[in-house]
Length: 188
Ligand code: GLN
Image (cartoon, rainbow, N blue to C red):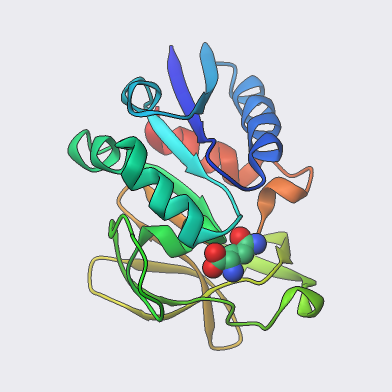
């Protein structure tokens, strides 16, 4: 039985919940998808997904609930999209609580404001995807331990480190389950 948790503190949680379920069905494994609202929920998870939303709010609540400590102490793999990418970074251009699990420096709102949202075809590890960018971050620098998996021109938008994966865009807002399957396979 594999347990995938969707961090449920703020943000587009239900979209991740649904797509994680679809991805797990496709992988034909015995699974449970659970909403993670407190430290006890987090402790049950084999992997946790952090949605888009407001990383300052999610980060603060992760500290207050004790979820941050559980993720770090239990070394739970994390897949973060958009705000989730920000939270995985070691550093951002803003003072805020972070998980600091990935050796990268992230710039928030790197592509502008909400009205500058856009969709673009992108490539990750040789496969094409639709990237939905909404007040998206970008990665300014990666350290030795992190692997760049996607770029738009020179701008880094996808990074992997061990089982952790951070994407600047929102695969959960498409019907495409491949990136969720990719993360889940790492966790299996
Ligand atoms: N700009 C937001 C942040 O830094 C992320 C936006 C999003 O998740 N769509 O928290």
